[in-house]
Image 1 (cartoon, helix red, strand yellow):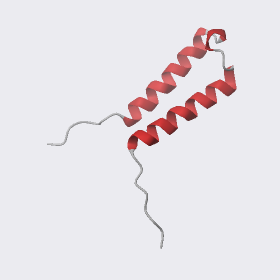
Image 2 (spheres, rainbow, N blue to C red):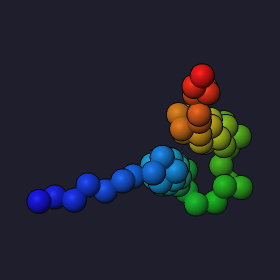
Image 3 (tube, rainbow, N blue to C red):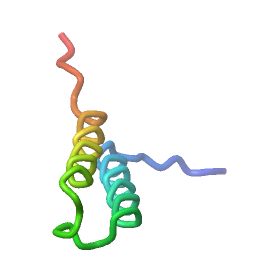
Image 4 (cartoon, one colour):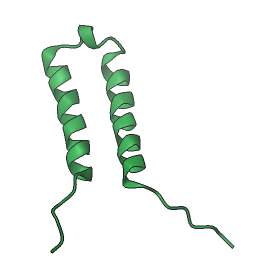
Length: 61
């Protein structure tokens, strides 16, 4: 018998954010100050996309 494990949306969002961090740190290095402005912009856009994916989509009536 397998147990079902509840996964919170917050946990999924944190995992997605960590994946973005890891990807960008691998591509551009750990020193944010040495990143080019366009690299920082790409990073911030990727973070915003994750937040938007997990944002509430409206209120049910």
